[in-house]
Structure formats: C-alpha cells, structure tokens
Amino acid sequence: MTTTAETGAALRLHDPNVRGFASDNYSGVHPEVLAALAAANGGHQVSYGEDDYTARLQELMVEHFGPGIECFPVFNGTGANVLSLQSLLPRWGAVVCASTAHINMDENGAPERIGGLKLLHVPTPDGKLTPELIDREAWGWGDEHRAQPLAVSITQTTELGTCYTPDEVRAIATHAHAKGMKLHMDGARLANAAAHLGVPLRAFTRDAGVDILSFGGTKNGLLFGEVVVALNPEAAHGLVYLRKMDMQLASKMRFMSAQFVALLEGDLWLRSASHANAMATRLRAAVDTIEGVRPTQKTESNGVFAILPPGVADRLRSSFRFYDWDEAAGEVRWMCSFDTTEEDVDSFAAAIRHELRDYRDGQAR
Ligand SMILES: Cc1ncc(COP(=O)(O)O)c(C=O)c1O
Image 1 (cartoon, protein in one colour):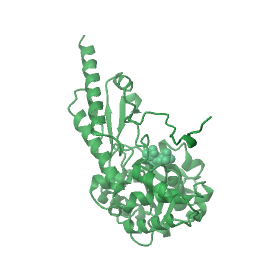
Image 2 (tube, helix red, strand yellow):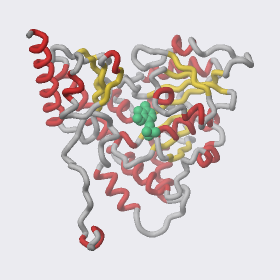
Image 3 (cartoon, helix red, strand yellow):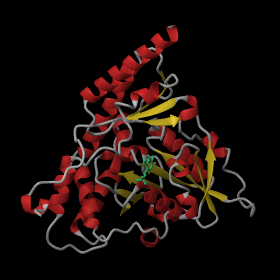
Image 4 (cartoon, helix red, strand yellow):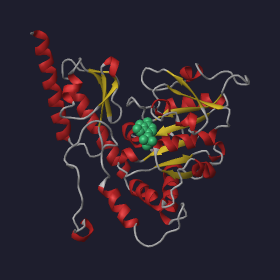
C-alpha cells in the first residue's frame, strides 16, 4: 500500500469550502500562522519555553503591554483562566463573575474542581459586570463561613458579543482594588475588542488596571494556544509551578509561541479580528432588515445574537450550522471568523430571509 507520505498527497476528509456560523473555533488555521509553524520546525530548540520563539513572544508582549509583564503560553482558554485565577487567589478565595461567563457556564466547573476556587456569579443584562453588580456578591470578608471574594473576572469581549470600554474596565478595576480584590480578564476574543474599540490592547487591559489576562489565540486563527499575561506580576503567585500542575506546560512550546509571534509581529491579530467583526456587522445590518428576527444584543465584536420564531432555527440549520444560545427563549448565536466571507454572510442572510418568509406565510394560512 502506498502511504500519503510517499505520494506527497495530503489526506483531506472534509470540504474546505464549507463554513457556518457556529463558532470562531470552527475555522481552520490562518495560512500565515501555518507558515510560521513550518518555519519554526526543524532542528532542535530547548524545550519547556527556553526557546527562541518564546523569548521573542515575551518581547512582543512587552511591546504591546509595556515592560515588567510576564507571559506564560498555555494550551487552551479554560487552562488559561484556571491558571490565572489560581495565581491570584488563596485556597479560600472566590471569584465574582457574570453568570454568563465562560468560567461559569462552559468550563465544566474547572475553576472549582481543578482550581479549587468558588465562583460567585451575578446575572447581567448584556454579559458585562459593573461595580454595582459586583457588589451583589462582593461582601462577607472576614466571615469564615463565606468563600472570600478576592478577585473579579470579566470577559472581553463578553460571551454575548458586547465590549467593555476602557473606562468601564477602569471603573471595575478601581472598585475591585479598593475592596482588596484583583482583576482577571478572559480575553479569548481580546483582539476583537481592540478592533471594535480602535485602541491599543493595553488601553483596556494594563492601563485600565487589569492584573492578569488570558490572551486568546485560538479564536483569532491559531491552531491552538493562549497566553496568560501577568500584567501586574506582583498580584500573581506561582504561575510557573501552577502551569505545570495544571497540565498546561507544553514541552515543545516553540510551536505555541511561534503562532503568537506570527499574530503579533505584524498586524495579523488586528487584521483577522477586524475582518471577523466586519462580517458580524454585515450580518447584523442584513438581519436588521428582516421582519421577525429580533436581535438581543449590541453587535460589538464578531457575534450576532437574535431571537427567531419557533422552528426557524432548526430549518436554517439544515444548510448552515450554528448554536442555540437560550433555547427556551428561541435565542441563537451566530459567530463570524477570520475566514468568513461576504458571500457566506450574504447567502446566510438570504437563507434567514427565506425561512422567515416561509414562516410568515405559514402563519397567514
Ligand atoms: C469567553 C471564552 N473564554 C475562554 C474560552 C476558551 O475555551 P477553550 O478551553 O475551549 O479553549 C472560550 C471558548 O469558547 C470562550 O468563548
């Protein structure tokens, strides 16, 4: 039998022209990132982060966030969040977060089970915490019966596609710090926030008072990888040991770092995020003109949230994949990626329009 290695033919099991609106991690790897991975291949490099690519990544992060920061590449976003929070808190610590936060909804309890931390979550209308909302759970210091609220975690952009302004982050940081709490930011979509706000990354992170950041890469065109950035290293303890204990220490770290170098060396991070945001804006503009679709959130990044009449989502899904967000309310989530095209958006919008027309006709009969 001839192997693919012998023939030189690549094994492809899917149709690379099929794209949907399910998640920004359904997309593949940006070609420039793949090229960077290939360039980082060959020869030997010291393992566990003592390589030239990880050193360059640290330099690039300093260019973005300023001197004195420390970065720790990890495999995934859940790991980045758990590691960040663990480094901020003692065993008796608790984290105030939005109820919709990924750490609360979508990490299978990892902050609690792996991190050993209690989450104190607060309902929000739009995924964003405020000082007032934080205060609903930030109380009870000194009470041995209550997990001690010692950190706040916010997501930028939020799980609902909304974006904190630099002033909003600053108000939260000032409030948290005044109460002796530290501030973590889950930046799985950090680049989308910078693209939306039109400001440098540090304007709504370090300069706004964030202590530690989960810097997302996967949703911005990487094969995998995120970086924990200790923006205020004095607030974070034991990151180097905790990363290993959390099973987030990559031996061949050069390949994680090389991808981030590809993102950050030039403007790939911003180009890709701006494009994904622009596709969501295009989709939002289209659905705003479709009778029967009710958008539920502002479109401030690469996702559109909307309520559809009963049955419409399932019919649409026969041609485009996407997820329910709140099934009971009929709310769905449509995500765009760095590789979503205008044609993808336009044909999806046409399909939505078509299904809504059918729905209305059915109602009229
Ligand atoms: C807000 C947010 N944080 C973190 C993550 C990272 O998750 P994962 O552990 O799957 O990389 C995601 C992925 O969906 C996310 O949306």
